Image: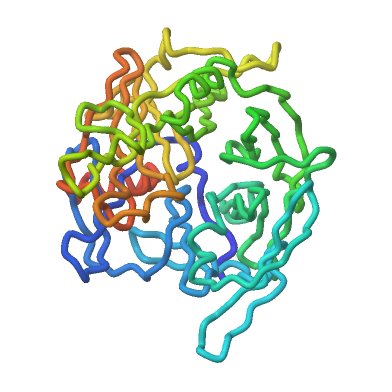
Length: 402
């Protein structure tokens, strides 16, 4: 079994990710991607196994199969790598098949930090909410030039962090020590995991040991500016939060999503969808309308707004994949000082047959404008697009082929 991979070059050189798209033709499961640099879509001939994508990191997709087992997949060559099974997660007591052949899981939920309720959940339903995000995290060098790695996932009703290596027999909770947190995002840089909590707090773990060790806590609070904005909007917006590392600095990106947005890009209430002259409600999908961007001041342990000065020559990529940053000046077609985003509103992405997966675009921090970089011709994109990172060698190889 493969238990290591060569990530050294991909760690040193970050190139713009490709956006993975649904197959170009219904019923076809071949790979389809969009390149920002080439401003075009292309496909590979090999077919991908079916699975629900819950992350993309270091050239791998992280997918849940039909029995809710997480596995790794390299989309460029269809290499597949197994991980410990579903029934080894801390919040899963076991699985069993009912008389009608439906697979169920004994799913434990927490309140006040303790498992206090167990319910039987069909695994088909569990796939939709069990794992919020998963990434591949590199830890320590191994003989032969490879790098030890593990998979880190945000999972369960309280959004805890768990980890496993491919050779492990089970999933384990990442040690917390002290107060436990619920996490919104997780990234890995240079053998260190950084996780962002719902309160704006950041915790870091060192991966050089076999078991992750707490490296530091950064006791930040969620920015008051964003809190006040959301409160003033009275439920018109929701927010998704991302942690991004750029040039050795941590950024907090707050994505502000209009819950119902009309044709003029204005957030409206759900009651506004019902009109007297028609029996059918207006279709106003959720859409990202703006961002708040903050930089971490380590001395004051506070998030400082940088919208007014931007992020220099960097371009950020966020969504269901691991959040990344690249130098836009090195790559034509990549807009500096911008945030490229894909749809990761998992709670609503499947709620309507007319939309879902559609919330993609590029936000210019200087102008505050959102534009489209890839026209897909529909508000229903299924499965939702994901960013897929490339190593420098993959980037050069694909550029030569295309």
